[in-house]
Length: 402
Image (tube, rainbow, N blue to C red; front, side, top):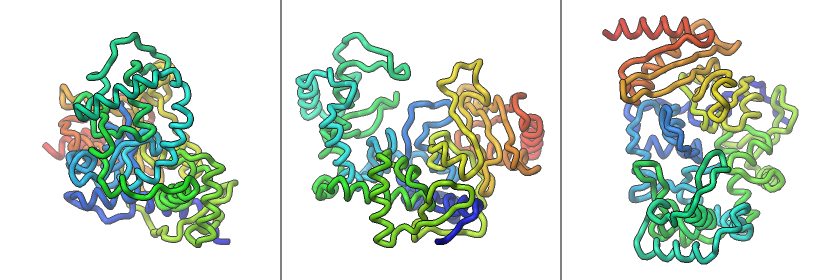
């Protein structure tokens, strides 16, 4: 059985995610397609403190790019991406629609868990209205009933719940979002290209194999729980699919230094000699979204603190890890102050593995990020051991630019 050092496993994982690809000075739709082939899915989240979650993994791999590329891929013709519960809420390739039918049927059988009280007739009425009028957000169909706020502060009207059930079961699809980030629901035949709607439905077992195959390609090297998490599968289902892929020669069992669980290497995985990354990772980036894997690969303990009361936050509200080479060497709390054109850095912290060049390297990355976001000034706060050196480097780069 082949063995990988931890450093080799990191390089395999980062190469699988696209960090070993040749950079492009002006990313195109072809660049985006290549990058999406690496990440597989893009998690969607409403938080817009810095930039919407689904835009950031593309930036981390492609560098500054025109965000309209993603809009065209997810709303234009030919449509490349569609939102579905693929990791959690995520943009996924449209060809995964038939693969996800097993999940749609599971939701149908469950009647979507805790929302079983939603009136079946309401779902029928809403479906009929959308079929007649075209794509609509929930606010255009709201019944005006009192709302509840017991799910992370979300307020879900009866109409919103019914529409979400219809979307999870595949009776409706997400056509896009409004300028207020509201989901627009429409009939699948008006959203999904005909060839994918007409594609044969896979058995649940075959769908599991396809999703684990894609997860293995995106991870490079991974444990069964890693592979199960990528498309939010049950570990038992993923384990059976892994064995199928091992028997087919697509996955190879390997040992990874320091890992207690068996690991599996995708046969097409690359092992570059070096990774030349210098970028910030969104809290929802595939590199770090499975926190146990992040600790095992990068010795980096990370928890998002958005939902933690301010007085109990350790690092900040919206903290992004800083990837340098094949290591995560720091983390910065960031906010785009669009009204004043400033990128705010309330706090910056170094990891034990951070080299002496980290403040200078991070300053360069923050300048690149600010430029992509259309922000002119970087303001570094005083919290964190990395903040003083970073503030000095940011000031030096601003002086050199002026």
